[in-house]
Structure formats: structure tokens, C-alpha cells
Image 1: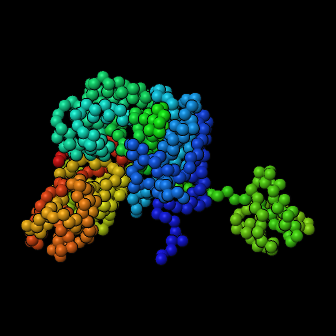
Image 2 (image 1 turned 30 degrees about the vertical axis):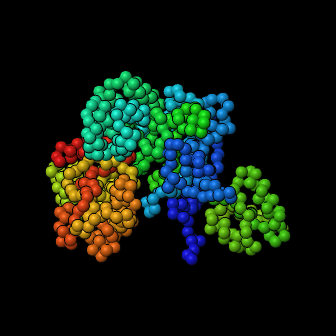
Image 3 (image 1 turned 135 degrees about the vertical axis):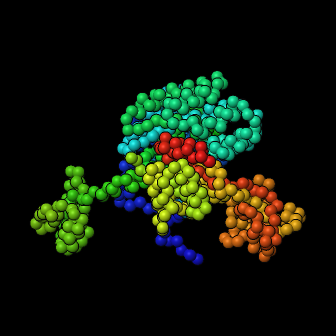
Length: 398
Length: 209
């Protein structure tokens, strides 16, 4: 049998030194932001029952989840997402809690990605969920938190907003099967114009079909709304467009310098449980979104509690990758002092080091029995202060 | 000026056709034509950088966003899938996926599970899944036509252009699977971050197809 004792599974990696510092800093910044906005942290188990992710609307394809069984033979998965577990908790233990509820999280999710594509199967996500409000102000709250999250990374960003509602309202007017609607959705998502046109031509021609054909091209800035209004005259849809335009204006105002707000009416993602607003965040120089979220008013009801919600997740792995690519890895902080113990003075040396640490210094105890090796170690590590505890204790600056 | 837009081209025929198209748009592609062994080449007046790669790699580079756009055959897209925008059917590189068997072979007859040899296992699986037909798929790297001749497979799913190879080996197309042509694809973030440039280029291309 072959041994794999020296490597990690595909899609996973060890982080060392500066990599850890960057990752923890990103997590700390983001979580600090959410806590300062009044969100409280939720930690859910890394293992969940498969059933939690196998609701009527299967948001996560089973082939993309890591599965195992518990001691009773029941099927478990490694959490592929944090929103569903939070929905589960809200629908059970927090059913009677006063709304709205605001949660943030910082935990790893696991998904099987195709092999040899350079993707991680283990992704750290931080994010927020705002549960129990269907108001526009809740959408704006989440957008504002998303803007702050992107801005905190200190590089040019862009936040894109859209609404799945417009697509849903348009296809609802077509007399076609759900299967056909899904085909249309997929082509719009891929902005696959040739295939979308062929498909829609096979259904017929009407203003709705013309609007659907143009939907994936409706992205950019303010001008998108004007173009959309020309194409869509239905009251219901005009209402949705007006609503989104209002959100867009507020977002532009909140964003200010350093970032850009854009709109894409062709955001109609697949495995998403979104029902209204959709947001995606990008940082310059990275080929995939680093933030994604939206409104999911029907998800929690699948756990038996009908309550609206909106939120987003930030892909911490992607952000650390960008930071590592563009900047230098931060240096590990070196100790301020090394304390060497002469024979028989070990306990005293540890006590001396402890009292220096209380003053806020980083202090190492030298793990050598001879003075020269300890000194050499301190010089090599560039530790400025060398302290000897013994018959007559002394200090030296190196 | 910002970094040039990077466009990955599938080496070979699609590369030549795309260069032809770019020249038709009035861009100077001398560097690409006289490339030698270089793999990244400038098209200066278009603020474009051409990257030459194998078909599958075009998709990989575009998906990761290290190339903003790409030109690749629909065959590769169907086999690889992935997350990118498929913006324009460029109309060249036309051919088709087809199911072929030995001449006069009753492929759909009998109840035995049929064996398919192909370089495109995903395309084949998807095609027969839609028919609700269980098949055994064997991946072949070289000349797929050999498999039915050697009686390893009942049929093949492969790219057919003229059908000459099939005919010379006593095979025939019994069903078309899907038409193929070259596609212009774009990274999902690049299209948003460099919208004006990419949309401008696409408009030019569409006008000149």
C-alpha cells in the first residue's frame, strides 16, 4: 500500500509564518467590523447531517460535499456553507427570539473542487446574516457592511448589485417548462449570447423575449437602468427596477472614493438560494469574486420557520492570496529578549521571563545548557536583549 | 495606459483565424505572425496581448483571470465546462460532434449496454444521459476510429469535419451530437472591471464577422 504520510490532501495546504499572520489579520479586521456593527458571532459544527443540505431545493449538489458517517451509520457532511447551518439554528433554537437577529461567522467550509484546477477544497469564510427583516434598509445595511469589508482590504474594489427578481418576473411570463426556464437561466448566467438567442428564438418572439435576450448585457453603471426601462414595461418589473435603482444610488453614496458600485441585471446564479438582491464584491487583480451574497427570504422556511433574511460571505482565502501576491509577507515578530538559565537557576529564569512578559515584552527562555549556544541563538534570531539568570544575573544588549 | 487586455488563443487553426480577424479589424499583428517560439505577444495598437496556449489551457487561464479573454472551440467548452462568460460565436472553426459506428451497424438494437470510445467523455456521457441510456465510456487518446474497428467499442463520439477519415475506415455518422465553432470567452471579473475596453472590442468583432 502506498503511504501518504508526508503530504496533505489535494485542495488543502499548510500555512506557515507570514501566511498565518495575513490570514488572521484579514479575519480579525472583518470580524471586528461585524462585531462593531452589533453582529454576534455564531459557531456551528464542522460536521452536519447530510439532510441539512439536502432540502427540497438542493442548493448544494451532493457530489460537491465531503461525506462521512457517524457511529450509527447516518450520513454526515463536512459543512459546505455556513448560511444553511445558521438558518437551521434560527429555525429551531431561536424561533421565539426577537427579530431582527444579526449573526456573523468566521469558519471553514469544505467543497470538493475538480482536481488539478488550483482551487482549495477548504475555504475560510467570514460573513454576516441578518435575519427577520424584508425592508430595504436591511438590504442597505448588508450593502454597507459589504462596502466596509472590501474597503478594509485597502485596495481598489468594486461591489456589484443585481436582483434575481427581475429575471424571475420575466420568465414567469413565458409559457414554458421549468426545465426550459433553467436552460434560459444558465445561458444568462454564462452570458452565452449565441446560445441564449437560439434558445429564445425557438420559443417565439415577444417583448419579454427581447428583454431576456438583452438581460446579460445589462451591466455597468447608472445607464443600465435607463436601458432596462426601455426594454421592460411591465408594472411589476418597473417597480423592481426602481427599487434596485434606489438601492444603487444609496450604495454609490455610501461607497464614496476607493471603490466602485456597479449593477448587473444578468446575475442569476445557480446554486443560490437568493430571492431578491444579489451582491458580489471584486478586488482588482483577482479573477473571481471575493464576496458574494444576497437576500434569501425562503431558505429558513425550508427548516420550518418562515422568516426573511439577507447576508453575504467573504472568501478569506482569496483575499489572503491577493495580499500575498501584491505585498511582502509580513515578518514574524522577533522576541524582545532571551533569558538563559545557569544550572540550578531554571525555575528562577522562567519566573524572571514571566515577569518581563507581564510588562508586555515577548520573551523566550533559552533552551540550551551552555551560554555560548544560547547567545548564538539570540544573535541568529536577531533578538536584541540577552539575560542571564544565575549566581550573578546580568543583562546584555546584542 | 493600463495593462493590456490579455487574450489567450488556441494554438493552431483557431489562432490563425483569430489573427486574421484581428487584422481585419485593422490591428497590427506582425509580432504574432513572426512569433518564433515566444508565447506572449503584443498587439500594440489594440492594447492587447496575445497568449498562445492549448485549448484546455485557454479555459484554465481565463477562469483564473490571468487572461481576460480567450478564443476556444465549443468542443473544449463542452468537455471542460467551467466558470466564464461565453460571449460571441466567432463562426469559424466549424465542425460537429457526432456519434459514429461501423457502417450498417445496428447501434440502438439489442438490450446490451453499449460501449463508446471517445476523447470527450463528458460530452459523451451527457449526450447519452439525456437519452436516458446507460453506456460504458472508454477514454481514448489517439485515433478514436480504431476502437470500433478493433471491436473495443460499439461506437465513437468524436469531432467530425469532412467525414473522410470515417469513410476511409468503414465508419459512418449515425447521429449528430452538437455543432461546434470557435467562441470568444471572457473572465467573469475582467468583463466587469474592464467593461468599456472589452465591450468595444466585442462590438468591433461582431461588426466584422
